[in-house]
Length: 457
Image 1 (cartoon, rainbow, N blue to C red):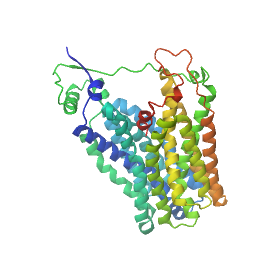
Image 2: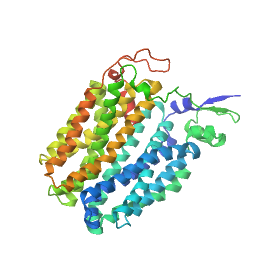
Image 3: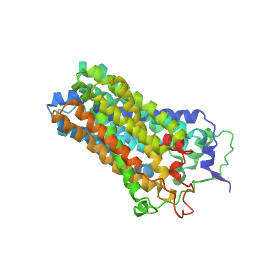
Image 4: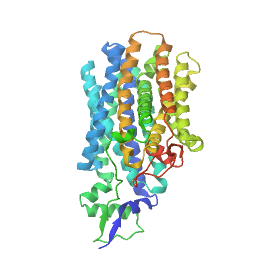
């Protein structure tokens, strides 16, 4: 009986209409996902005024979606295994569309926060599923680039939120920006009928006719026998062992990576949640403050690309360190009104860039057998920073401190992130197992960086 290696067929495929379709829908979904997360930051000043809440309460309201994201990644990741990734993405789209629009119909902080929590479940579930789907379908020679392009949809969503806010919040109220987030619900039928399902899911469920149709469209040059059997790609022999993160001289470095992830996600969500409000406190009207958010997200797209190029040239550790330093300098100087447009762009490039750099750095630091555990645990600790950031900055704003002290707090966290990265040891793995990647002084090896960073963008 003829056996088909599905992974090899995918790897060797030429880019065609099927890849265009998958790329288009994945990119569009992440634009909507990014919009739904960023919209709270664009409307926060108006929400505070409308609901008569102080900055501390507003910080908790902004964090509710981030708290929901923690659950969404786990719940919808599990559903993807049980129902297929296509249905999981559709469910995520329903959740973030319905509940973000529902938040626009609330009038008190508690109901708003509940709606945002459930929206966060959808937002958090969509990101990993969409990126995994694009990774699975992309040809090997284009995989890094396609995943990077699709990942940029998230930043485009943030830009869209700023543009919608500029056009509608002042004239139609903050509710209009949230209600507009319900429009992506119209995409669900297209996701279910136009987006092909996960190849590995189809193999596991013995859906050979669907799989044969997809592979024929992907590789019309390959004749697939009607009686052929399809093989799953071999899996890495991974271990779920927290203790191994501290072996072979990795203890301090693991803790420092956790600190760096905490700092990175703190910076990301402090700025996305409070930038508009802080610029309004600096004396800018709402329209001008929203322009800063637009520039911030544009800088993020550039930073993601530039960071990868510099890391290939100069080594990932010190480029990550430099991006943290740039974030510290740009956010601190923002509090003094020095070239705000330029500094916001630099802040966006460095803060969003350092997040992608860290994922790649952690992936290179740990051997293959504990790589998922190492990266996953670091990202999990980082989520604590994401949840804490809007609350802490909101508390500082409510204390009516000078504006420069609010930005200084963000700058200090960035500086601590730089310090944490500088303390990560460039160690050689001792006695690597057969399953581990044999790469001496692995964190200096930047040859695989661009692939890693774009895959996680």
